[in-house]
Length: 208
Figure 1: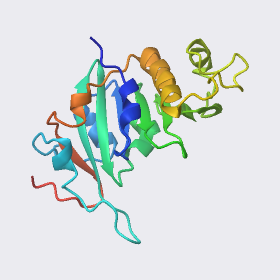
Figure 2: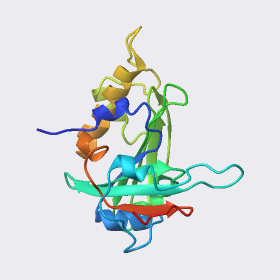
Figure 3: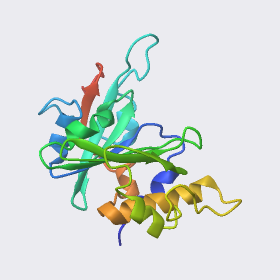
Figure 4: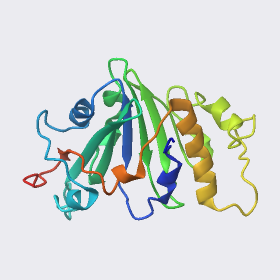
């Protein structure tokens, strides 16, 4: 049974992001996000990752860490703290690779999804705000969003029923992304499963 990614709407108190990449190993994904090749910790859990850094320092950059793994034909990275690894989406996708970046938020600003391929960020949008799309090909996923009952065929009108909770709409859009790219991430990877971690920003103490 596939885990999919719709459950990511439940990340209410986990305010970093998730990067998926196809066409590279988990280690290569970490390196393209700013990690040092060969710089992985032993496999650690979510709770242990949060103990590594000083996430926010007044007046300067905080630390950023990524735990990485592979599932369903994609590598993935779970970002912690002041990581900017996911902001390098075009770089991550160079040399024919693909990358998807999901940033969870609460209502406003909305969660966002971006997609890049072969060194170019092609499209992105906020969940619940799919009428505002960006990238070199902003309408790349328009047919998918229409078919998934997120947008009307004009691409400028949401289908959301009146009174619908925003998390239901978020799940519908994540379902579109899940289906289009074949993405799946077991919930256990976020919390319980031990995964190697890399420093991708700042000076976190990786001696764990």
